[in-house]
Image (cartoon, one colour):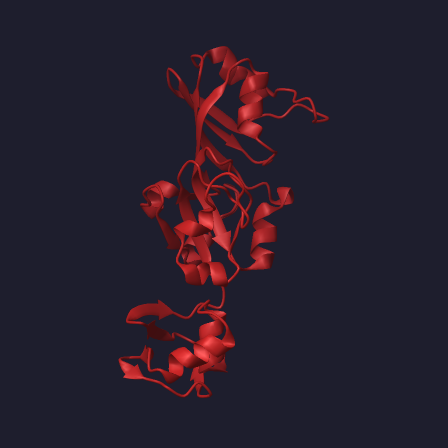
Amino acid sequence: MSKLSFDRILQSQGFGTRKYCRELIEDGEVTIQGVVHDNFKALIETKDLVFTVFGEEWTFREHVYLCLNKPANFECSRKPSHHPGVLTLLPEQLAWRDVQPVGRLDHDTTGMLLMSDDGPFIHAQSSPKRHIPKLYVATTAEPVTSDLIEQLLSGVQLHDEPAPLAALRCEKIGDFQLQIVLEQGKYHQVKRMLAAAGNHCSALARTTIGQLSLESLGLEEGEWCYLEPEQLALLVPDDVK
């Protein structure tokens, strides 16, 4: 990090156009350590910078890494078509920063959704080459049987896949509920695997990515948080320490 002009700092953090950021500064709406800084040309050190806009405190972040506990009936798209987009659950400044979902959850799937404005991070997390395991809890229409678990672990054939797809782990946790761990990230994979195995997915939630879980973050549905370096380090395959 380095020094940047104050208007560029505000713009980089998602507070609007350069012109609007200059107006905010000149109008005295931005403070650092309680002191109004009204010179938009002033060079400010970005390292450990904390500032307030309209009385709300913000920490300068070169990139943002977020986790959202996605509710049902929200689309993972910047241009949603049938339901509200997940960006409506975030402060407006994060949308201005061009935050994007990392991969997608169906509109009716809930749970752990990573989001960022860091292109290389999004690409790395989305790449099937990384084999990052993701844990889902699936509620089924028909009872969970030992045969169903066995099929999911040994592999089921999907009509558009060259080879059967198998779960890394799968276990029954209720009469109509199971946990399943996948690493491939195919389109509608859990739902399609359950259908291929003779059952039907009536509800689905993603609870863990790599070694980072929603439970550890303490997020209720619709809540989000910034991910810090120690949490980002957990977004890796189980065998990578």
